[in-house]
Image 1 (cartoon, rainbow, N blue to C red):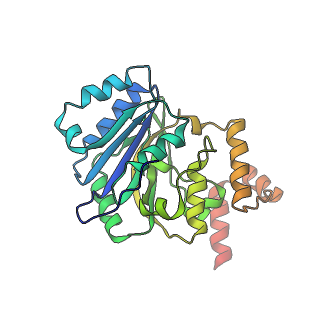
Image 2: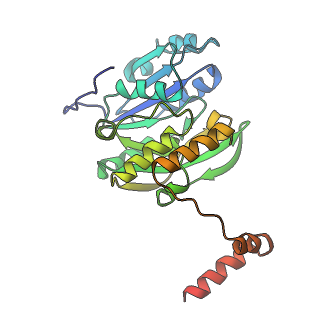
Image 3: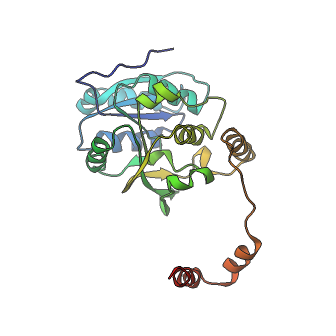
Length: 263
């Protein structure tokens, strides 16, 4: 196991980590979105799982570029045991004060790291998170802005999630026994430890909904249950009256009624 980096006065501010497996086109999109940022105080770590589709050759082609040489602190193309094993590998090579995960196929919003960095500077030792735009087949579908106040109900997308690297030293890495839900488990672990979550009103990235975690599979359902049990999350059945009400009453009328009742 690689040792964790010890912060010094010249450390990098943000470590951006991209994992990839046989997604060459998605990887190129992601790398371009990172390397084209005007913000400069970051390092880039790329962990490829031994792809056979030309992903390694793509990284090698980029390695001659000045921006790649300046920002890519580490990259590899080798077999791993899964998504979170690859993520943990990236974290162990990170030297930044903050860790940010951006998987292949996803993309940072143009120059978003400038306003994000301002927020990070003023919220040390807190989790900072924002919204993401979701895409399927290159078409916009919806914007996710899940609140940390509702973390018990599900994970907000890790593409909008900035975590202090020191939290991994204190509270551990992603649990590699999970295949899909380890990011949610990690966020709940931080919440259980009393960490503060700060919402920044920005769209951080574009999320490719064709990824493995975007579809509710039997494995996904199983891991959701495991996370709920681990963190003592009690799931209550939805109120039947409210479900029927939503079917027949327009949401705007429900909202108006709530406001009237609050007065």
